[in-house]
Length: 324
Image (tube, rainbow, N blue to C red; front, side, top):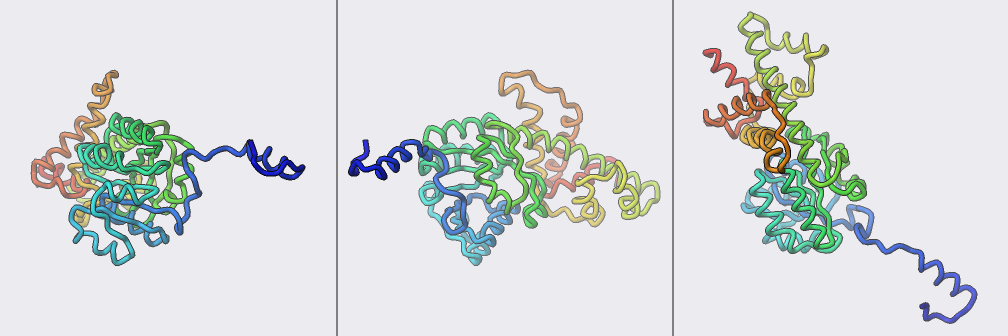
């Protein structure tokens, strides 16, 4: 009941207040002056993404196992946290961009979750396992917080230019609420409930891997046939053979630029999840012969000591097969 004097006007105000809903998930709109960002994972992709948020005016706190590697982000205004739990306690939205599902389990599920503030959100950009993403979502809800699995596609160029495809799974309203942050990094698409972002990324990698193999074989064939490789790419990119993979990696392959936008060893991981995910979830395994072959070819790169090269280095495997 209202404790104010019973007058006509106070009665109206109190009656209205009974119908104002209590905010339970996201207490305030995202704003650079108020929303505190936490970030873990500052490699090729994560470092570029965190830098964009800093440039957009957000307060960003970083946890790094090796602080010397984030000096460039500190020079842009980033703060440092002593531990993942300290970072969680001082953040409203936490981004992670890690290497492997085992890293996600250790840092997110076994460390960050227990220290989350109520109504905070974890966004995991790591290419990880759909089942693990669901576990993180459930654990976050137990803390009255949220988790979004949001792996990305677009490589280092997309990360630097803010043109990443962000494949978001979780709660649709939470994803919409996060759009001011996602818009700094690229374009987010809500693809379904918890774990669906990771499933979408696996499907993405199946397509990207197939395109990389086709481009590699096309370039090797073009050279063997006596074609100028740059003229070949220029001629076919406007037709059906053209693709974003050709746009991003064609010149890099020709110029022998194998610097990583994403490590080849991560492609092996992603394709492996695609081949095994059905069995781990208790569902029928999808038969993917092309993905299985691609995984073998990318695994050959790793076996050759090239696991830390970019995925465009797949052309070196096709060249070796052809005696070059």
